Image (cartoon, rainbow, N blue to C red):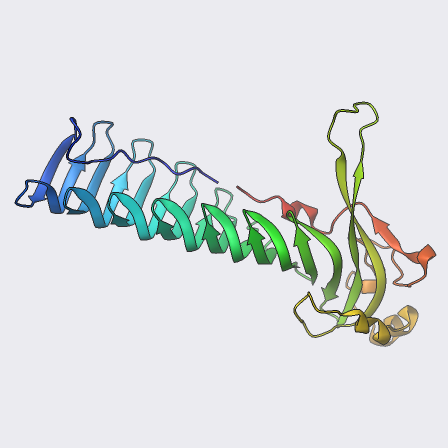
Length: 286
């Protein structure tokens, strides 16, 4: 994600204001519509009020960035679109030069985030869409990272659970289009570097499958959904009865998208995988 470009102020008490063509008030301040070229080569065309950019206007930076939108007392404030030099774009709310409120950010790789912002960061409810795979994360964010209840949507299934520091943690479920879901837990483990005792531990995420049940209606994930275990079905029985397409059977699914888990609750049959399904989807721009 690009950092915001700093705009040079145009206060009338500065010695060098650049050039200006436009309306002025009785105090000879820039007031109304005008065009200005700042000393550094940046330009602004739009509304002024008592010497400051206020209202709508277009600010063009010498590095090709530009902002089109609302101003208040020389600051981006209200609705506006910022085009960054790297090709990314933010279209949404601004609060005194800060991305804050509702907005959509389009990244250089065409990934998008649409939702709430605070202090330039994804914060609150929002949806991140990966352009290459069309996968989506829909849920809550805190200071730019996934935090709290959320869902990861893939082509044939989705993951529903809670996220912590950008990764899934604790109880969750993989919901498949064939009417079944695999219930389990994500566990976080840390492994120390044996060769470098001062190196930070390596964090690993493991999916532990518990059972496979009929798909449950979505509920707020802070509610207890242990009752889903009472509807556990025999894996071989439902496989033969329903004849799901290859690759869509939850009893043939593991965290790497291959075969392995049988969905049994027995400890010796629990699934433990190092890789998170669609782990590449956790690495977004910004």
